[in-house]
Amino acid sequence: MKLSEKDAKLFFQLMWALQFYVNQKLKIVRISSLDDYPGVPSGQKVKVREALYENIDLIDAFVRENPQNFPTDHLDIISKWKQFIRGSFFIERQLKKYAVFIQDDRVYGVLGLNESFDELTFDARLPMFIDTVLLPFKGKITYDGLIGFRNIYFGSGVRRGLKETYMRAKQNNRIIESLEKPPAKKQHEAKSKPTKDWKPELEELARKAKVLKGSVDDPAIYSPAFSLVKASIEFAQAAASDANDLEGLHKALQKVRRAYNKSNTVLSRKE
Image (cartoon, rainbow, N blue to C red):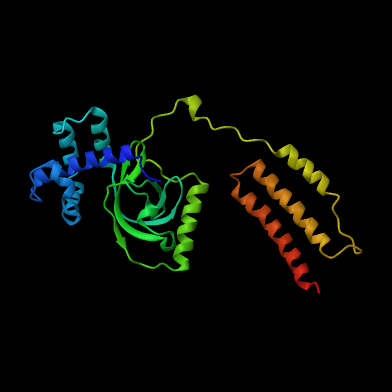
């Protein structure tokens, strides 16, 4: 969950060149050579970085002047940094693909630079509250190389809330993996892949389930268990019929809950 070594090297080449340019314009740190800028203490780099985001038009000036004679594709990367997102974030979890950053109800998939986030943090300490700046880079999201870690412990309520924010975003395909505006899709590309029609199979299951009936001579669990099977099939049929009918799905799910509760009651009474 980090950039390739080649891309990380390119990122810092571009970032240090841009920040050196900003420093030359605004005279923040005493330094005369771009080669010396990577060795500037982090505290001083933070001042230059803050000046950059407060004077974002300097990115356009850098691209126009191109003092380092970068090729067009490199200038395009720098130009897109105007789409930065600056602020405080929770690192909620670390996946193989990226680290999950949460800001309010927005969930981002963020790549590390030279180090992945599991090298910068410890899983046992997640969620972690940080301050940083997210930047687009080659269609993905990374950060600008500087992170402020806050030593705050979060209780179970906060952790549950963050997990729910992540799970909701994941379920609804709302995890933001790029800050760049995607190109317009052609009409044939925009069509989603058709899902399998499960209605025939579910109708067959419902037909077979009709014969499931508990009698007074059967174990007490039979009747509620059979009701649970039928209610579950009805719920699946409602989902297959219209997955966007939330009211209908909730009603069908209530029948499943009632059947489950009856089953649970029977089991709890058993001696």
